Amino acid sequence: MSSPVSKLKHFIFVGLGTLGDIFPSLSMAIEMQRRGHQVTMLLSPVHAKHAKLAGIDYQTLGTETDYEAALRNPDMWDIRKGMTVVLEASKSIFTAIPDYIAALPAEQECVLVVHPLGLLAADLIRSFRPDIAIIAAYLAPSNLRTIHDPLVMGDLFIPSWLPAGIRRFLWSYVDKNFVDPVALPIINQARQTRHLAPIASMASHMYAVPDLNISLFPEWFAPVQADWPVPMYMGDFQLYDSQPDTNLSTELQKFLAAGQAPLLFTPGSGNLQAAHYFDCALQAVKKLGGRAIFLTPHREQLAKELPAEILWQSYLPLRSILPHAAAIIHHGGIGTTAEALRAGTPQLLTPLAFDQFDNAARVKKLGVGELLRMSRLNTRKLSASLQELLNSVEVKSNCALVVKKFTNTAHAKSLCDVIETVKIKQ
Image (cartoon, rainbow, N blue to C red; front, side):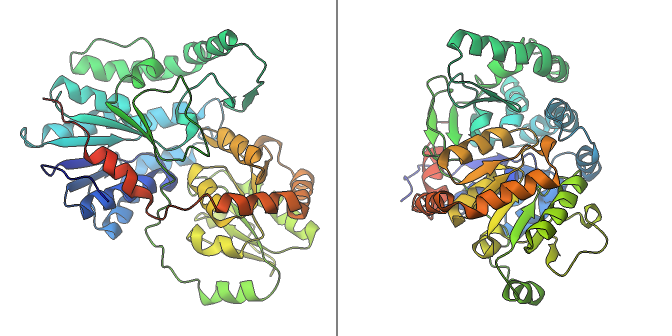
């Protein structure tokens, strides 16, 4: 049951990234609107249709051209260069978010719920609206730095025996050599425009911005760490889909009924660099004598002719198709990972960048899947990994145990209880 509120507020949800990043914000936005609050989504024009389908007011950030250009940049999914592409593509938020807030009535009580990448843009608002509460919504555990286990830095899995001091040094090294040289020029230029002092480090300043921190994943997936920012409220996976009742097409139903449960291959909705992934998948399916569904909106990445045992689909709600799949082979995005956990579907994660390696480590620790780095992907390794995964009785047993952890069907309610009562600064 939601907490009573004395006055309705304007909740502004900043959604950045691909669909897996947008849907959790929409889940909360819908619940806040149901409670009678004014709600606005700030998101890419590419995803505006999903806010429209949900009946949520929205304002767009950036352009479709910038979004598509970032996805087509081969460096997007490079473990070392991907963040540079994201930051360059997101520069407009340092103007767009403050400009949107500045146009609102000064007397309106507002709460900003922000994707981590938007926190430093949201911080600029305090130069003219210090009364607005800022809430950081962390989609995946890797958004929250820690020196504790599992410690994953890019594609490096840091051993548990490494002393805490060295672990702290490693984060400092990452900041000094990879993060700050790219991020600080963009951030400090925006701060200078608003007559704010420059910052010395992106990470340390970012974690100091929010008035409240919330996780969009449960504690059983990633326990709270002592060095995470406070106050921290642990929520749950926001398993939302804008088209949850989409019926399986006649074509797909016939395919499912024609043979054994297929493998489901998806490299993520935003991955335009997956031709090698699908080529390996095609050869592995042939080698194993199995069946598969290739799920991607980008048909040009697949072979022109696919055998009868493989069906291409541009979009499917994962909650609808996963119960029919023998296993899912995916990039390791948090949304796809969570849906597979809920469905009890064995997972083979092929991470590329960002949060994906950390998510893969957690899936492996839960015993519900395996990891095969995309950089090492070939037909032989993929076939062997799939054979092992499909034959594992232990994985299937662990999947069934994890399904029982999904007891909360109203994922947004507890989070919205918390953000609804956040104190507006006076």
